[in-house]
Image (tube, rainbow, N blue to C red; front, side, top):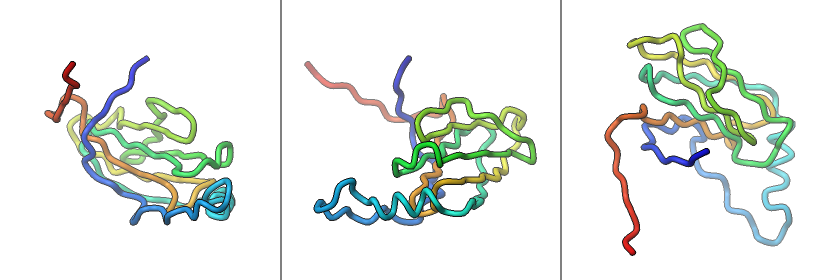
Length: 132
């Protein structure tokens, strides 16, 4: 029901930005999209504060092929929210302890999958408004 912005605490993946698309082919990055959709499953690891959000998202429209699962401190975690090719996780059982995440991705490649840690809700952040 709403849209919000939060400060980024850390970018885990990808290591660098997607290559520029040529503008001469449609859809853009089609070869990269097909390669990502057929990529073998892979794992990533991250450590976050207990109340941070972990967002895993495909940067390419691979749709049904993209899937992600995550455990925090060895306990499987269900996404707080899941839409399109994006899943948002928070460790439900961490208490005040940090979360050691094991993330498994299929249908996406490391270079085309965004894994980002968002600061915990309530963490002071900048805000802005448009003047009339």
